[in-house]
Amino acid sequence: PAVVAVLPAAGSGLRLGAGVPKAFVELAGVPMLVRAVDGLLASGVVDHAVVVVPGDQVAAADALLPGRPVTVVAGGADRTASVAAGLSAIGPDAEVVLVHDAARPLTPGPVVARVVEAVRAGAPAVVPVLPVPDTIKQVDDAGVVMSTVDRSALRAVQTPQGFRPADLRRAYAGTPDPRTDDAGLVEAIGDPVTTVPGDPLAFKVTTAWDLRIAQLLLAGAAA
Ligand code: CTP
Ligand code: MG
Image 1: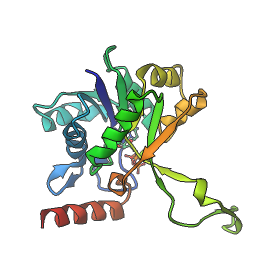
Image 2: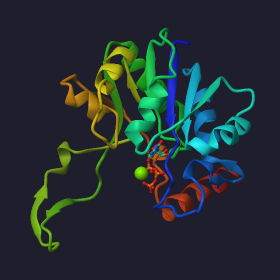
Image 3: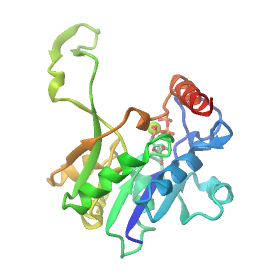
């Protein structure tokens, strides 16, 4: 398949504190993981998804995703290890690899399309970004402000992040340092990472507050 998406969904969701792995938490009756997969497939630009879940949840995840072009594999101890496990399940024919957090269940299709288009146009690594609206300050250990950062040059980074498969594999070769995003590993090997506009709806569900926002957005959409 030409465009393959890896969905890291093997986290435990400690900050959400739902008592079950975050990807399996339901939003208006549908697990986040299923929403994330279906959102990618509905974008029209993704051919196959590799879903990476906790080792004891592989059968459960398979059962949640009948009829989709999806492979489910077991993840690792941190996000980087989980993405690495997903990458090894990708066939040699992929032209574009996306890595997309299962915890971003409301990501709009056009964001996915922008990322894929930029990789197809020749970028080795592409991330969707938003400007940072708040004033940002650097503080010391005691919480005392040391400086105000120039936010005009800052961007908040979302997923899906898009890559040429060879470049992402190269970034993950060996034992990569754990990172919070995949483009960080590409940066570490010196490849350029470019940006496309993200979308507020691609926010990550991290805390109970985020889950509440997601529920309210879905309730509003149904009304
Ligand atoms: N993830 C993963 N494997 C891990 C850790 C995280 O696949 N070992 C995934 C999560 O399932 C999530 C994404 O990476 O889809 C982003 O991580 P995060 O929001 O931090 O999720 P969790 O690690 O589950 O949450 P927390 O850090 O609060 O425990
Ligand atoms: Mg985490």
